[in-house]
Length: 230
Image: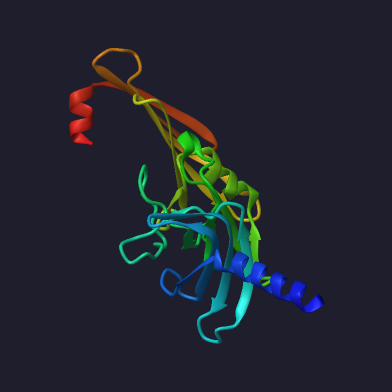
C-alpha cells in the first residue's frame, strides 16, 4: 500500500513539474547567463509565477535566484523570449540587463505582470549591491516601472531615466529623472503635449529644472505641423 501511495505521489509530482517551461538566455548580459522557469506557456506567450536563475558566465555557478509573481512575455518564431527589448506600446522583454543607476554595475529588471498604465508591462527592478555582492530590489525604480507606460528607458550619456505616460489619444507626458548617488531620483525635465482642447492645435509645455528652479515654457503648434516635424 505504501509503495502504491509513493508511486502515485511520484507521478503526481512529475505531472506538476512537466507543466513548467524552461528557457536559457545567454545573450543580453555581459556577466550572466539566465535560466527562466515559468508555469504556463502556449504557442505565443508565457505567464504565471516564474523563477530567474542567474549564472556567472565564467564559472557557470548560480549566483542568485529571483522570482516573479507573473513572468509574462511573448515568444518569437523560435519559441524563445527576447532580452533587453523596450519598445513603447510594443514588445518588452522578460529580462532587461542595464546599469539603471549609472554606478558602473549591471542591474536587472524582471517582468512582473501587466500592472503599468493601460495594462502595460510592469517590472521589478533590482540594482547590484557591491557590498552584499547581490541584486537588491529598488522600490523607487520599481515604482517607475509600475506607474508609467511600461519599463522606463535610460540615457547613459546624460545619465537620465526617461518615463512616458498618457491620457487617451491626445495628452502625453515625457519625464526625465536624474539619479543622485545615495539619495535617489530627482525629476529634472518634463515635456507635456496637450491636444485635448478640441482645436487643431497642440499645446507643448517644457519644464526644466535648472539650479533647483523650474523654468517653464509653453507654445501652441498646429497639430499637423507639429507631428509632421516629430
